[in-house]
View 1: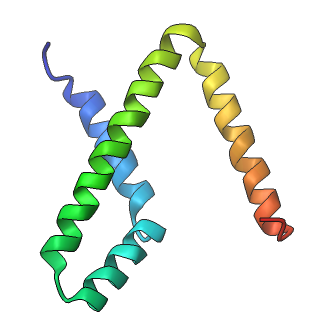
View 2: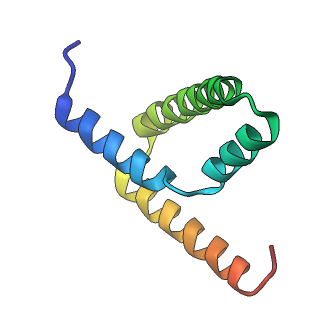
Length: 92
């Protein structure tokens, strides 16, 4: 299996930009400042992100064999719109 650098770079860029200043980063800042142990916070964050990413990639690989990418993209977009509207109207 050869490394596909184009896919790697696109994935890295998308995740990096999506994760900037989100609630996960705010939790890391709060935990590191409160605990005074930034290395422990970093290791905990990396381990948690590693596991959740492995789970999502596995789910994506399984779904990718059974669903068309357009359906996954449309469903994801629809869910984001619904969640956004629920947040906007203070229902969640």
